[in-house]
Structure formats: C-alpha cells, structure tokens
Amino acid sequence: MLRNVFLKTLRDRRRGLIGWSLGLVALVIFSLALYPSVRDSAEDLTKLTESLPEEILALVGGEIDFVSGAGFLNSRLFAFMGPLLLMVFAIGFGARTIAGEEQEGTLELVLATPRPRRSIAAQKLGALLVAVSVLGLVLWAALAWGSETWDVGVPATRIGGAVLGSVLLALTFGTLAFLVGCATGRRALASVIATVAAVVTYLLSAYSTLVDSLRPWRYASPWYYYDSAGVLREGLQPGNVLVLLGLVVLLSTVAILSFDRRDVGV
Amino acid sequence: MNAPVIRTTDLKKAYGRNRGIVDVSMEVHPGEVFGFLGPNGAGKTTTIRILMDLIRPTRGSAQVFGLDPRAEGPDIRRRTGYLPGELELYEHMRGEDLVRFLANLRGHDGGDVPELADRLDADLSRRIGELSKGNKQKIGLIQAFMGRPELLILDEPTAGLDPLVQHEVHSLVSIASGEGRTVFLSSHNLPEVEALCDRVAIIREGRLLAVEQIDSLKARALRKLEIHFGTAVSATEFEGLPGVRDVVARDGVLRCTVVGDIDAVVKAAARYRVVNVVSNDPSLEEIFLAFYEGSRAP
Image (tube, rainbow over all chains, first blue to last red; front, side):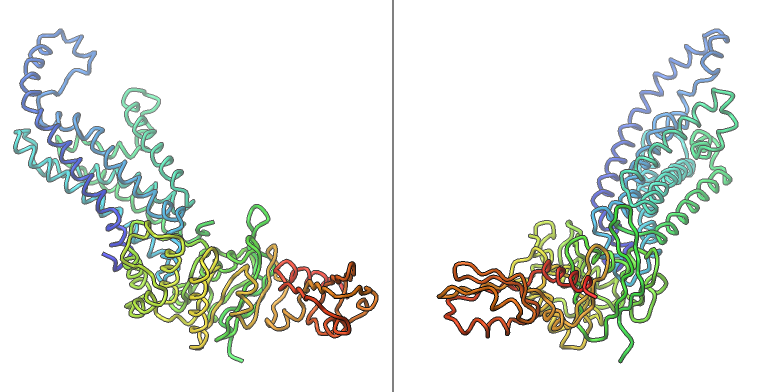
C-alpha cells in the first residue's frame, strides 16, 4: 500500500472507509426494515386518499406513492439521504487530499520526489473516485440484500442504477472540492464552495418544478440529471449518466491542470 | 571547470508583502558544500523552493544539473535529496512506512536506510506523531540522504536541534562531501556554515550581498576586541593601526573593532602587560555590517 500515491492515499482513508461502510449498511437496515409496516399502514392511507374528492387530491399533487417499493426507496434514501452522505464523504476527501495536506505541510516531501505534479494530483483523484465507488458498491450490496429480505420489490439493477447516479452526483461535488483545493490550496474554502454548490443546485432543482421562472434553469443543476425517482421506476437514462460523468471529467481535468500551474505551500 | 550544479540568474520572486527575493544570481559547483547564509525571512527558503519547483519565479531563471525545474523537475528531483525548512511529516504513519513510501516514489529500495537510522539513532518503528521535534528531524534527514543523491538541498538542517543531532548532521554533510556529492545548505548560523562550507552566499532581505570563499569572508569580518591591561594605556597608540577602528581606552581596558585578523593590535598590545584578551566571533549581524560598510566605501 506504500508503492505509490494512489494506494497510499487509499491506505490513509482505510479506517474512514470501514466506518462509512458500516454506517451505510446500518442506514439501509434501519430504513428497509420499516418497509413492511409502512406498506401495511400505507394501504389504509391509500384507501383514505381514494375516498377523498378529486379536488383535494389535485391539491396534493394528484397521486401519492406510498405503496410501491420504488417510491419508498426514493423518498427514504435516494431523494436526499443517500447522495447527501456520499457527498459529505466525497467533499471531505476531495478538500483534504491536496489542500489539507498542503496546509499541514506534509505534501511538500511528496512533491519533492521525482513524481510529476500532475501524476500526484491524478493519483489522489483516482483514490477519491475509487473510495466513493467502494462506498457505492457497499450501499448497492446492502440495498440489494435488504430489498430481497424485506420484499421491497425493486430489482437490483434498478437499485444499482440509482446508486450509480448517487455516486456520480457525489463525485461531481467531490471533484469540485478537489478542484478548488488544487487551485487554491485552501481546504476550508474547498469544502465550503462544494457544499454551497450542492445545496444551491439542490434547491434550484427542487424549486424549478414549482416556480415557472426557474424552470429553464433546471438543466443547470446536476441534481436534475440524477433523478432517482425516474431511475427507480424506469431505469437509467444514458444521457443523464453521460452529463454527470462529463462534469466529473471536466472538473478533474481542470483540477489537475490548475494544481500543476501554481505555487504550492505559500 | 565543470558545469555548475545549481545556477540562478537574476532570480526574482515577488510576494504580496515585501517577502520574496530580487536578482539572486549564483553558481554552485559540483562537489562543493555551499552555504546559504542569512537571517530568518531573508529569502533562503524561497530560493530553495524554486529549485525544487514548489514555487515558480516571477523573473529570471534557475537551473539544476543544467535543467529547468519547471519543465524537467522530475529529472532534477530524482538526483536530489531535500530537507524542507519547516518539516512536516504524516503523523499517523510510522517512520519506516513513511521512509519506504518516499523511497518508492524516488524509485529506489531505500537500502541505506537502516545504516542512516543507526547512525542518527532514529526510531523508525514508532508513529511519527509520538516523536519529539529532534526525532522527526532525523526522519527528515534519513529521507533526504537515502539513496545517496548527487545533490543535497538542506534548508536549516540543524535549526532547533540539540547539539548531539547537530553534530550528526555535520558529519553526514562531511561524508556526502567526501564522496564528491554537492551540498547546498541554508543556515542562519555562521559557525555552522564556517565549519562545513567551502563557499557561502549571503542573503538579506531578499538580496544577495555576496558570494565568497569562507576564508575571505572571515578576513572581511568585523571582530569586537577587548584587551585588559595591567596598566593604563592610551587610545592614540592603537588608532592608526591597519583595520582598527572605534578605539576606546578607559581604566586599562581597550575596546575596538577590527576588520580581518587581529595581528596588528595584539603586537601593539604586547608592549604592555596584558591581563586578558576577549575576542568575540563575529555574529551574522556583524558580517552584514562589514558588507554594508564595504558597499558604502568607493
């Protein structure tokens, strides 16, 4: 694990990765174990809503999905909680791995080795991608198992699609934090900018369905291309995956180039 | 003469607040121990960090092994051992893991690490966070010297260390120099530079004041001299002696400042009964003084 910067960066995060994995598994268990009882009471609720006059139903959006496994998984995990947790991990990692080590001063000896700067940045970025993907795999495995166990009834491939979307969304903001860290060497700034970007684009995406004047702007939010509800019901849209992937590649490239250009540790 | 190992030409680095360096030009030749002398904040670290391609010059150029740090940094760093002035190590790692990691990145097996650790009496088995400053510095020294690099760039290698470790650093430098390797050593400690270096560059407030042989530096140094006599003496007898100035004689004690060696004063004093002679090694400030006075004279 000490052979290169990539492996050493993962090695540094091994305890964190184990802790986060356990946390995600616990989250999945506590969420999905509730599903059978939620479904039972939701059937009563559905009967109630069916008896309501149409005007009132229209007020609350016409249709409320309590019963389906896809609706439950989305509202419980994918609409917010799942991507949020992966994002917290990815932003923390992205801000810390260059900017954090630079501010501590520990990066200096690594940069004094014959490895080119771009390679060091790229390897650290690779560790970020792999670490978030590992958490995604853990989340997927736990959900596939839990969905089977508690009879949620969403196929593992659909769940995998939603997890892939969450991972890409988390990596979008994780690589943004990495980029700001690479360009400025300031860890706190990197965390703050990436977090603010995640929150603002989330709100943009949420309000753009309600406020007409915001509608054209919905394409500007990465969350729009995430669309976990759609993925769980109908499967992944390749176009959406490509947009998020493209964002990650773009931010990564700019990050590596900007780190190569500037003074370090000033 | 062989091509210089390090050559800087009108090197300039501008920072916001008056720090940085201006017009630094010097050459370090193969096999020499070159001292880079100046007080803290004079620009020593800035110059060194340009050589290591951690920062880029505003103007001018630097070359190491005839290569450009910006374009050919990896080729330079493969042949260079570096000890930063403000050494920070991964505290969660054990010393041996960090050293192995850095050896891997340098592309060698770290075969001489046990020998170096032995010589420095370094504990590589403990977590670095548990080590004292001196013991951390030993790990910094090991990673700089391992693999016998052709060039060693040591930024304040003994600052804040106890005399025992300082002594070990000096002997490591002597060994490296004995093997014909080049050492670029920054320091604010004149006796250290005197003891180790062949030539010295003096830097202050970002500007090089001089690049000199150590011997000629000493010859130009101002020395404060105090001679206690058994009888009263008069200042006039010492005032005209070559290199002697600021003569004050009172109550049988003569105080003066001498440029270069003190031969003339001692011979003049020998005519009387001399009780005691107090001569202070010139401090860094006094050497700077000498250069300022030198530059004022035509």
